[in-house]
Image 1 (spheres, helix red, strand yellow):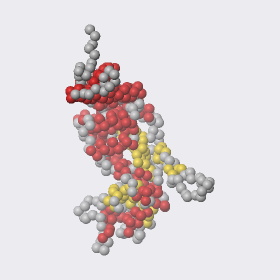
Image 2 (cartoon, one colour):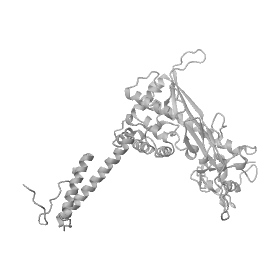
Image 3 (spheres, rainbow, N blue to C red):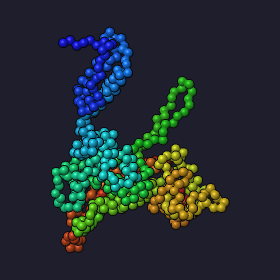
Length: 492
């Protein structure tokens, strides 16, 4: 029987489609629903001759509902198409990201070598919300996020090492001389090694195992948080060689010139500052009994490594010689007469001196986020005592305060390896550094690695002592790449 033609007296009935009709549909099925809705909405909206219909209240509701369903269907179809396009470019990475988002992380699906920075960041953000990261303080999570923004390798390392399989494999590797790995543990170690070999100048030694990031004192100082001012203020870069090479310039010089005159050559003079990497090492011997009886032994050992490693970095970034160790900021600035500012009265610190050295810092370096002061507690105490009954402007904080933590609106940090006031009668290299610490570059190659020494021997009779040892190492360097961004207060 032929279908009765639709007229004004016999309008089209309401569509049978609802929002639930769109759920779980393939792209092809969504297209069919949208096409059917288009036919139905056109019948509601127009007569056969193309003239517009006047809709009653029920018809208008049906039309609005149909439009809403169509719009939602189009959004879902566009999302399908967008994801399909990304899958074509990088199927393994996207699949891994979706697993992370759904809370079904299978790290074997994460090919970090092909993932974009954004994909890595999204995956790590999910990791930071997981149980594995709950023992981190908020400042440590913020530190990791900051590092990921600057260094792709940190995020990749988190994805490769912060999972149950790698952590259990690492625990075995650094506590058992002949560990028996499960298939998942072996695969996790191999994935990390493959990534490390792909990005390194030369492979890590065969026995080295990268510490999981959330307990790696090389990346996040679990012992002292942000207590190391250099790791908080300095520019940090990751390299896959033994030298970081940068480019610096004083800038382009502009000038006003006459009409139709030949332009001058304003190409700037370029320089190439470098930061050489050196190997920091730590060794922790322990008895076999401790290794067997100590709960969470590997994690506790990394805590001890963090304490010693942080202390070493503060020392060397302050006064390192720059030959077999990082070049300290004090070492570098002391050798540059252009950045030294002498105290007003030799042998003593006076109220004019903080003003004097601050005024010598170029304006463009005075107002940066990483502009700060560095000194010992002795120098800080001396500055706190500059305010007297007739020198009110030099007052900082009262005696109950722990530290004068701000000068000229900039944070003041402590390094116990800066010279103290007890040596002012001599000519030491300097007492306070102030400037933009982003001009001090810390370069590193990967994270910290640990090797297990399965048996230690007595040095006299060559017999085993019943001890094992952790041999930890990290490649890192530091140097000022622009001395003019700092000023150093000196005695003479």
